[in-house]
Length: 201
Image 1 (cartoon, rainbow, N blue to C red):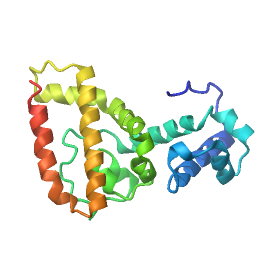
Image 2 (cartoon, rainbow, N blue to C red):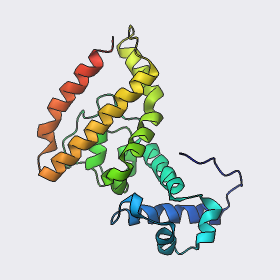
Image 3 (cartoon, one colour):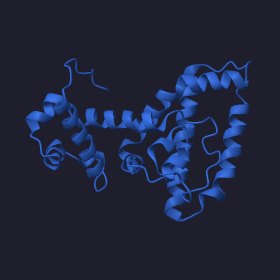
C-alpha cells in the first residue's frame, strides 16, 4: 500500500510542490470521493504537469498516504477513552495544536482541515488502519499498565482498536446526519468501550 520513500534529497521546490499536491487533493475531496479523482484533476488544480507529479509520486494513493500521515501526526495518540470529555461540536478547539491527543469523535466534530478524509467512506478502512497502526504500541502499553495480568496480544488489540474507531466514526457520522446532540449519545458509547477493555484481563 505505502510506497517506498524517495531517496533523493528534497529541495525547497520539491517540498512546495508536494505540499501543493496534498493541499489540492484535500480541496478536491470536498467535492468528490477519492476513488473518483484523477491525477490530471489534482495536477490542474495545483498548477503542475503530470510529468512533475510522477517525479514525486507513483499515484494519488501515495499522496493520500502522506496526507493521512500528516493527519495522524497532528492528531497524535488516540486516548483509550476515545469519547471521554467529548461534548459535540460546541466549544471544540480549533487550533491545530489543540487536536493532539483529543478523543477521535471530538476530532471528527472539530473544524479540522482533514474533514474530507473523515467523510469519505471510500477511504475509511485505509484511514482507520493508519490511525490504529500509529497508536498501537502506546495503546498496548496503556492496556498493560491498567491490566497487568492481561494476556491480550498486539494483533488482537489491533483488531479491537479498528473495531472501536470504526464504530466511533460511524456513530459520529450517524449523529451528525440525524442532527442528534453527540453529548447525549456518547455516555452509552463510553460505558460500552470501558466495559470492553475491562474484559481484557
